[in-house]
Length: 270
Image (cartoon, rainbow, N blue to C red; front, side, top):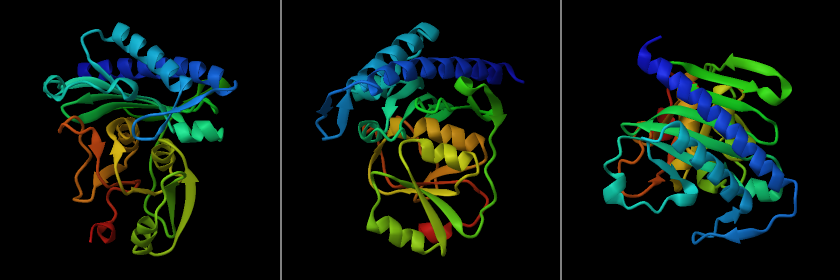
């Protein structure tokens, strides 16, 4: 293992520990009567988002004081400052707040390390189940469940099957998406919230996720790293991997996530 890979492995495992601490803060609120506010974009915000944000930001600053931290709950950092960053943490303290509010358990804690516009560490932790996905560049993607004593095992995507299993958004489905998927022939669809879609593809439980419309960069970075290290890919509709902090906007365009990156997906791009 190279020194660089060893350092990423150390940071990834530490980020996984931090995500589990944030999950405990989230669950303490999830199990209570919590209030829901609305952000300017009408997306929901709860005390759990803020509690997890505080835990993660403080711990990452202690772990790597030299690296900036960009979190969904503290994203108002001016572009002239942010554009100079080459390496930084990108955090969604609670991905899937709508699912949190619905109490269906399908929300995650996302932590990614971005290096030269690419995610090189990805952590996706599911508070309700305790499932923890950790990946780092060159080190693979690993799934465990510390709460249930399940040791880490390496994730690997599968070859494209027929019919496809499509991981669809539980809160953002659209008719346009259905029309696009129809080009691929027969498929089964499972609805999932948050970054669980990336993890399920990485774990060979699903094959494709199509996202049409804007998403924030903190929604995708950690899941992208997990999926890429398991053998998959996350691409925009020009066929290029998603990139981070490459523009003033922190918004992704349309993209799709695939398990079998060597299969022919041109029907999606036509």
